[in-house]
Image 1: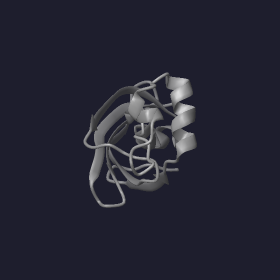
Image 2: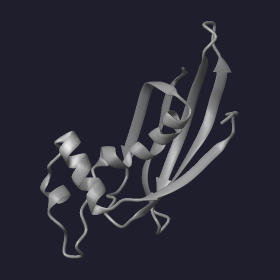
Image 3: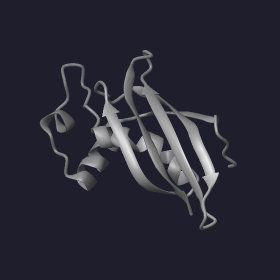
Length: 125
């Protein structure tokens, strides 16, 4: 994928109970709200599991992250569909022939409520 300043990369994902269970095993984030369903049968998604959405752009483009900033705005639950929009803010060649990248992101749920925003910076390997 060729990236350019101003590009907006948009995708969505719906998290399920199995996603939370796998992430719980890997992260050891076993907060009660991640393992005990609420009155509607939903689990709260770990914040860092939600944060994997914008990092997908990094993975798709072989980015080695140097910094990542996340602001968690509201809980995400199993069954929620999260729409992630990543905007390329800077993309330029460095002296070492690598490309540097800076991007911002905003994630919203199916009700158009913001759940996560932030930015990341790194280099393309």
